[in-house]
Image 1 (cartoon, rainbow, N blue to C red):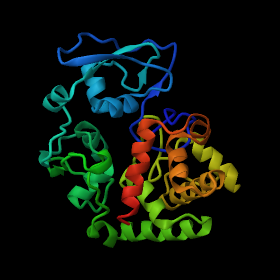
Image 2: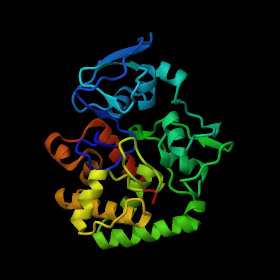
Image 3: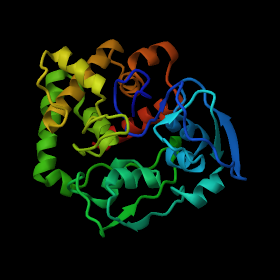
Amino acid sequence: MSYPRWVGLGAAATALSVLTGTVLGAVVRTPAQADQVVVHRGDTLTSLAARYGTTPWQLARVNRLSDANHIEIGQSLAVPKPALAAASGPTAGISSRRVKVALGQNLTSIAAHYGVTLAELVAANGITHPDQVEAGSTLVIPGVAAGAGGLRSVGGPSSALLDSSYGQALVASFRRWSADYGVPVNLLEALTWWESGWNYREVSSTGAIGIGQLEPATVSYVQTLLGDPALDPWVPSDNIRMTAAFLAHLLRHTGGNLDRAVAAYYQGLASVQARGEYHETAHYVAGVMAYARVF
């Protein structure tokens, strides 16, 4: 998630920046069933979507943003009400649905379109290689009805993924680097599963890379922290190592508080310390911790 990660450290793949002084796409027409909100400092499409019960995709679509990577402080946005959102985009229905993969689509774009996480899409379809999807194949889009705490039911990697050579190599890396840096292995697995569905080719709109969705600034920071500029975020084991080292760093600075460290991974340590957790951060922490109980 982004320099909308407040300080550029951490990962979630969907947050979108708030930048000042940039001319952005205008709202052409306010839908009849929509509320108007004004963008404030610190807002992102992701945080606004979480606050108003919609998705970043819906906000970009309804407001016809010409550049969905940026919104501007003071900008007025139309926020679709739940009935409109359900009828015209990523569904909030209870039942799963099946869709056919079109040319040019990938798991990331499909997950974003239907308002689910990459991890949920991978888990629902028992995908063995999250970096691959074939045009013409059929995918199950998991139902998104919220359970306790507003979270969907969660599921971890399929046995097919875990039994594959790719999955086994990842699990070995998780165990090695979590032990080396003293972080709970299930937390490291859960955080990266939420971030990328363990897709080492995953890249966010802000340039966050790979399994741990490491922002470029985070990569440079951890390379310096570990004294190894050769660490490559595109190499799964290196990415997992840097994620584990960064999580250990956050744990040290939060007194070993797991929830606080995960919040800092998403929102940025300085921001969490200065402002506390934002609404979308609390959702992120709850989601990661729910996955940690699966692993």
